[in-house]
Length: 226
Image (spheres, rainbow, N blue to C red):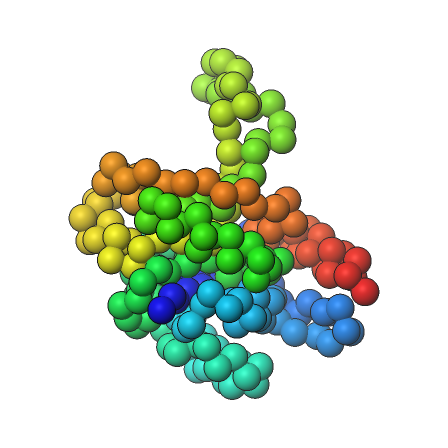
């Protein structure tokens, strides 16, 4: 049995007055749904996923529970409040999800994830117990200090991490318990234990909404599907 933790507990600091998970987006049929509905729908539709824990801001738990019922997301087994840091929120999701074989962790701010991409993550994780969605860096990357270039990095070895990231459940729980300090994603926690993390290729469409401009781009991509 496999599970998923979808994390949507951030503060949306760069979104101005927009509360990111509940920002309205019009789907391919013309129906307006909150941003959060899109990633949850993808996991709901993925045959590899049996149950989902949804992590939201502390003040949004009741709203999220009503949203799950309205959208008929019957794979969502729990809605829980997140913590101060992203990894605290993931840990809260893991706790309420309960033990399973593999678990996918996904940013609720990536609404264009697809069931096929999620499935690829589970397939990749079966090889080493850990897999990270990523895309090759499309641009030249400079390392800088005080506004000055230190060196140009070898782009052929650079990948941009996305989610979903998929792990053996027990491995990820162990990493959250043992690794101290703040990490930017779950793959980094597992890497700190010396575990090999396999990359599987994501998509440029699987973008993370962090600004109002990102939201406009997602809406344009949704319209393309009509």
